[in-house]
Length: 316
Image (tube, rainbow, N blue to C red; front, side, top):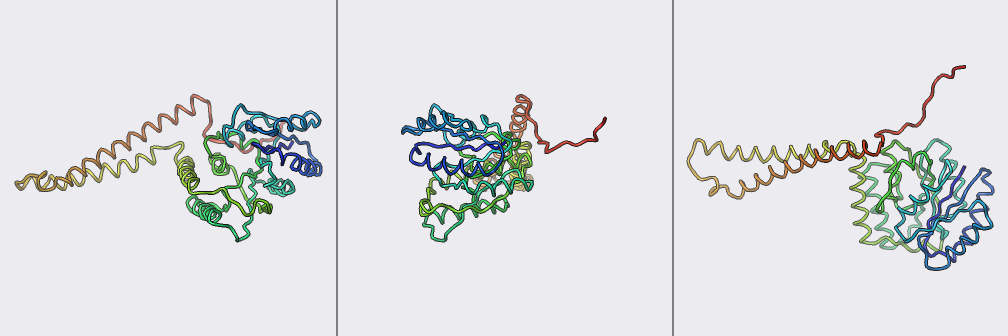
């Protein structure tokens, strides 16, 4: 079964054109489907229009949130309510063409767990567009992944994979990377950006910093989520060790020669002491992180692994 998930907010003019094109495409896919609209507390007539559509179309379900909690929360609500083995998330303002759904499904059938629709660039992007491209390029280099469009939210997921991921903040943009923690395999396929949206970009300086913080967060989760001591402990020992070596280098001559270390090397002594204390703090942070990780996994019964499949010889 296929679930199509569409979060939206105040998109009344786009709903009917989008719905007509979407149902036309799904009718050709030839597999059971459901359509889930997540209304992010729209203040126009979006919910009323969707409710009317739900009354006449048994494939359609409308989830109305009490307020706009953000796109990550909307996706989480849709993932929770969906019943399909495959979930397609897309925008409802025709930024994402429903006609691209078959190629997303085709790639998913090749064995991938997540397929992202990567928007094509027309080479005419303004400053914001170039900033977005630069950000995507930097992220791909930091993570060493072959992905060029981290801003696209047009994706097809295997439900068994995506429901392992907990979303918060703005991390929905990096769902393939979050799912990679559980061994998910992701790929991109090109899609065309519609003309009515090709000239604009919502990417600004403020969002650059937000994405930078998210990149650091996910980088840490990918590498050290189950072993934080390997990160903090390494830098803690390096910092404390360096401070101790400097203090030893200053103290040894003092044992053989007279003189006041503070008068002669006061700033260096203070810096060394600060480095030692910093190292101890980092080391203790690593220990606390290990305790928190064990508490998190054990208290919630979560696994630190994900099984793709299990096979055994059938017995009569």
